[in-house]
Length: 326
Image 1 (tube, one colour):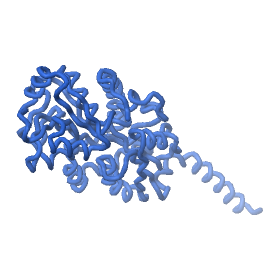
Image 2 (cartoon, helix red, strand yellow):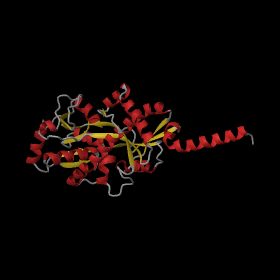
Image 3 (cartoon, helix red, strand yellow):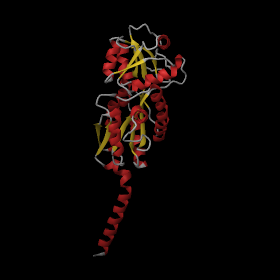
Image 4 (cartoon, helix red, strand yellow):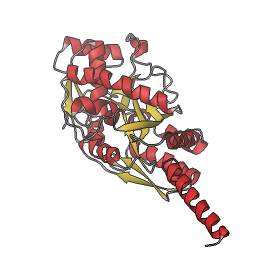
């Protein structure tokens, strides 16, 4: 073997060693496919937001982003699959308030731990809930609702998309803070829940703005209050719950992306940067506005802190409302 052959061999060995060390941090940049698991069926807010982010993330990373809908058990099945995936940045989970904060209190044996199984990547958006009644209801304000419910215990009802759903949890939180009774009528999905409210079969619901806004605009529903700390630009005349005497009330739904625990920091940092860029593009902002969502570009640490804060808060609500999953 010549001197040149020896030199080439040493160089090959050195490059191979360097590649093996760097591989975990760059694999997300070189693999052709990135799987973004959505733990709910297609068409919902989680799915729509995931697709909006994925459309920008793919070209930015030079990868094909595949949206993989894995529904079941309130999002737990898809989240569990994401938790078990290889921690290389090529599998992500579009989580939300239910999957990452409420489910630990609802399901005694989750196939994942929201804190230990994942590393936070990016807080994507928050979606305020809107408290609504039928347009023909004599109830015209939040104060009217609370007063009527207190004076006629067991008479007023509220609907939701199911036991343990975001609407169920939000309304139970409102009941806990405002101290009034209302009977929960769970449905199998948000659509039938809204249909019966419009038909006058139930008295109220407290659910995400995307579902509510069209019905408020067409005059079928009356908006009493919003769950966020600030009024919604799309409903400027509707007060916040906090404004109506319940200081600090904040019960927005939120969405964010996490990766399996152990995903390299360099991969997380890059994914966070690209997702934040996507959130600031006009196309994603317009898509979110249609969904009643507010973009929340932040560092991974801030999203992790949000998850950690929310878990005990919603555990209290689940316990107080004796909420059980379907």
